[in-house]
Length: 150
Image (cartoon, rainbow, N blue to C red):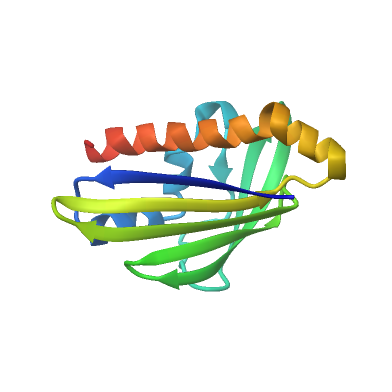
């Protein structure tokens, strides 16, 4: 079964500046909860464009995991999409959109994901995975607010 998480955040900075922050793959390390011990493994520089592969490491529920993402679409400064190639989810597709609005940028996240493992995965999603994904994005918005002063 597929699930969707959507978040938006107003950032009082120009769209090009906000997009540039997200186009630097290493900034994901800065806006991910420290409890996940998340870090980018792919060496710098990482050129963001369709087909770029990026490797990450993180700890999820105490287990060290590798995550490989592919940039599926990239159209600066409007949007980009990444999708999991290898990682903890059966499917993960994340679209980042950036809309120029009066006084700054409205950023949208839309994540479509599947947990896998049939009924057991559905139960895990209901008990803790869904809340964990939501908490990651809540933390991310708080971190972005501190970074950009929103």
